[in-house]
Length: 78
Image (cartoon, one colour):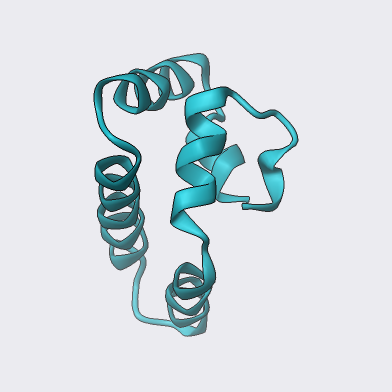
């Protein structure tokens, strides 16, 4: 789900792939984590926001970073 969100548009996909090329996997994982938390924090307080924050806790950020770096279209589970 998060992979699809990050690559939803060509512009967004290009941006994140560029970040993947320019940064180490651990730096990209940190960038992704901070970005996702910031985006979810913009949601109004609700069960949806709480659920989204809990979901972010189980994302395997290193696998997501690798999927973005390598352009996995089947990574929609991340």
